[in-house]
Image: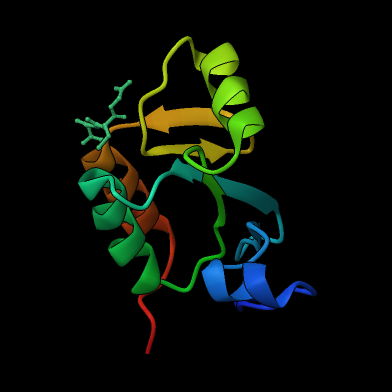
Amino acid sequence: MWGWGSDNPAKSREGGDGNNTMPDGSTLHLALYKYDACGFCSRVHRAIDQLEVKVEYRDVSTDRQMRLDHRERTGRTTVPALYIDDEPMFESRDIIDWLQERFPTKA
Ligand SMILES: N[C@@H](CCC(=O)N[C@@H](CS)C(=O)NCC(=O)O)C(=O)O
């Protein structure tokens, strides 16, 4: 089922816990590594706000461990990076296209 539900109000405001149930019943977890002053991240954030999708936001400017995990996992510090079931995707345009192809626009 599509929706924004989360037990954590802060996470809900930010886009949910990242757990999505897809139309075929499978589940997909999405996490966006970003920071607020990053224009490419804002572009992705705006696109997400238009879609019925739940994305867990991981701010690498405020969470040192997130930053270290991201670099260790990918060898890069670049954001935005969308982790799709823990597989990182870079490039804001590619991330937006990928999301828009899979998730419906909000009514
Ligand atoms: N072409 C990339 C550009 C991403 C980019 O330049 N991100 C900057 C922040 S706005 C960054 O992470 N720079 C640090 C780095 O690459 O390590 C995109 O569209 O996502």
